[in-house]
Image 1 (cartoon, rainbow, N blue to C red):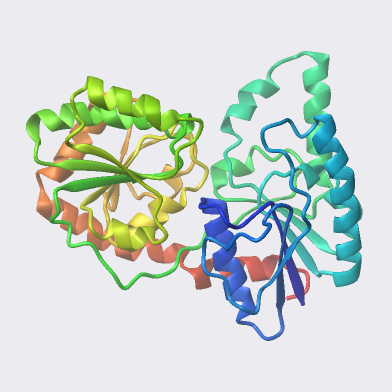
Image 2 (cartoon, rainbow, N blue to C red):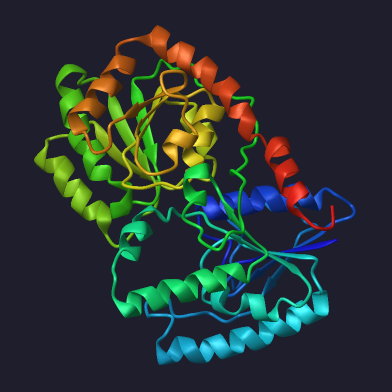
Length: 369
């Protein structure tokens, strides 16, 4: 059996890349399965997450100009090259399954060059905001969504990460399979006076809300620290640092950059915090639970509520309520016993997302299992 992951690159840190590596490594341990990862712009970069040596890495060398629209003349010319190379490779490999884990230009033509392969689209982002856009009654908007829904129907399966996201797939071919998480032997002792947040430093993560909430926490707990991990995006960090300085939090709020082993870092903290505008199924929450780290998160659409068991392994806070978020953080900060209980529950509750549990769901999806 041949399984192909079809993506742009595997050298940048991200949830999609981490999950893809986890699944690829799992399947590569099966002697009856050959795993390929086909990229368009990997070049000579090293994969950011460890990959089994039996995995076949193939880069097509398309190298889209990411500073321009896909529909720019430059990228349209590259797209023709992409189609030609991709179709030729699929014809040579004859994969049984092609998995497309993100939204690339080839989303528009994969169903028509896949041959006899089972084609699976993974949606790692939430379509929550799309629902309001669909209400626009203009003819152009209606035609756009009719085309998108028709195209989705040409995939064998659309895999979504939680039940809330399933209703946003209008083509009737959605299946819910959550992201898997590796079991961790490490566990936080929950005694360090530090709170952690992580993710790409971008507006959708709403770290400004977290920082404003921390200004309230800092009044009563000035000896506690907030550390934010992740790469900067569109100079968002610069604006956040201005906010930190304006709130006089520069001694207690720190940007730590990226890390290759986030669970190991998480074990140094006592609470994990999330204030995102939207999340589909954030891996960082699974990773926090895996090391017994209690979570405080906005109940934003749609991911956190599908991972956190409220008041068991974490606290779900009314969305965009900065004051309530600070209060919930403080309830965990001042009660080490509550943190300990939630940490133990976290280790237990995360078992439903273990690799073996999730990969059994994937195996049942394949026509060839």
